[in-house]
Length: 433
Image (cartoon, rainbow, N blue to C red; front, side, top):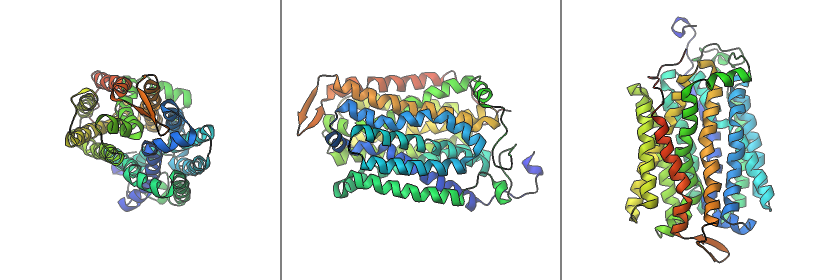
């Protein structure tokens, strides 16, 4: 049906933003959980009696289940709608977070992280799905960028503010408190959010919507075979992993110990620098996404962002020793450029039929989160095998040479992200029929 021929009014923007905002709050809390380990490395290593490998694995449990849930999440979003998916996800995340805060052994802590990661995995795809129904298509890339901004607010909260709270009440109390907040949010999502404007008497922005808000589909295997038949799907599956993986492996776990070791920053200064990286990433998403919408191009900005991000990491890890001011500048530019990855969600949505938006978004988000899932433990494994480690006050300290070797996979994937953008096919911001 042509929207211009429908006399039903579009949804009020205030209503659309209110519903989307609750979903964004869930994504914010999920991002908080994702990045929180960065400022609690010493507490976790001491409480659970682990080294870099164990810490990397404990942090990565979140990503194992998160990645595994992406294809099911996309398919469930297409069939069930985002309301039930997001509400249930927030409830499970609340249970996992409280359980993690109460755990006394590494195994139980890992299971808590695993539960949280799988639960919050529905947040981003659910937001994209909701946005496709409640907002005009021309705003999709910008709204995707705002979703990233919401997430990064959570990441910034997991920097200096989280460190401040941990110093005063302990990390366990903080985790349990965040779990209780997530439980309240779950109830709010079930109460307020609706999958499609038609359920409130307004016009939907997405065609072929059933009364439940889901979209017509021919089955799981058919949907996957269809989206995998497009070249952009394969390329855009791998590309964001190098960009997002680098940002989250660094700011979410290894950035603070690296900056305190190589550049002699204090823990608070290093946490602040990592927060700046995340803030720049958050700003880059909506700005570059909005610019992409304006110029009606996806590929040039995405490719430029991948290239600049690679050069930024290369300079930070292997260039001359930088002053604190230059460290902040490099991290700001690298973070902003990495925000171009948000264009990929609009890029891939336009590359396949509209009725498969949820499925392909879940698949691409799976590729996105494979970056930190692989890089965080890989870097930790390389650090423990570098031989350049000393123990002080029960804590393991790795020298700059160890980090130089351990960051090689991160640099390699960042370069691959840039190279794989070359053969992608431009959509010119037009939806595939």
